[in-house]
Amino acid sequence: MLGGLTAGPAGFLFMKIGPVFTKCVVLGLGAAMFCLQLVMPADAIKRKQHATATTTSPGGTPAKTRTLSQIASVCKRGLGDFRALIAANAKVCLLLSTLVAYTIAAFSGRFRLQYATKRFDWTWDEAGFIPSVASGIKLAMVGAFLPAASHWLLDKRKLSAAGKDLWLSRVLVAVLLLGSLALAVAPTGVSFLGSVCLYELSAGHVPATVSLITSVVDDQHKGVVFGYVAVFEAIGGIISGPFLASLFNVGLDWGTNWYGLPFLFVGILQIPVLMILFATREKNHRGA
Image (cartoon, rainbow, N blue to C red; front, side, top):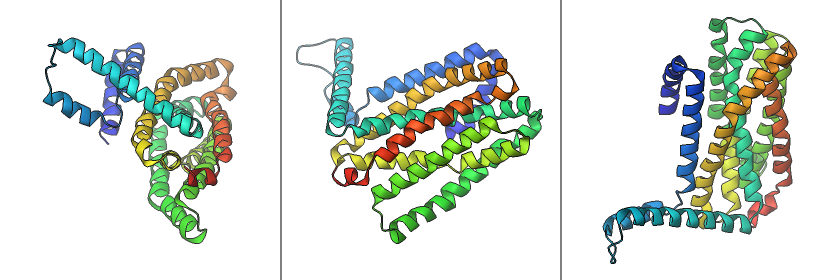
């Protein structure tokens, strides 16, 4: 909520300074978030309390040296936990990698307004209704349809919680793929708006996939999984901005029919994601 409230004004102020400065800020924040998540294992709070209680070491080690040693120890332990997690179930890594594609897809929504103004000659006032329409569809999906679908899959189809998340992820990512491709090739403004509605019907695929990932691992690794969910989302955030902006500029150079190149890329990117989800079987979760 706080991010949503501050992102618009902050972006406006940064763009007043210049686009290069804005990209540097975004990349810097993404890199900082990645580093923080990388060195934050599940038991960091306990170690922090222990470090506070023992501010000095028996040998009188300087504080700076102790801090560097603790950071190295935290990084080593976090990477060790991740290796143990992947060794226990290699599909966890594949499922985590899908979060990178999801983050890139989410970032592509920021190009809709500019795409509409250039492709269909909409004014910025007209294009300003796109986020409102998208938010309305997303609210209806998350608030009404997904709970009803979950209830139907659990009670009527008698699926397990993992099976329910697996099928929701498959269906929603398929809708995301179709919506992205429809955005890329929409010939008119009306079809573009319909494509936006189709795209937003995929709302909920991220929490469904995260729930699916946590169902793969045992209880002692769930904290590590949530930490690396944030890490992979941060990786997607670092990649998405410069890469999609470059694709959009390439599309502008190639001509009107290529203005939707970022959406085309996002749609193609969901194909391996769907392959991973369909290769994942419910029996694997039950045995985890």
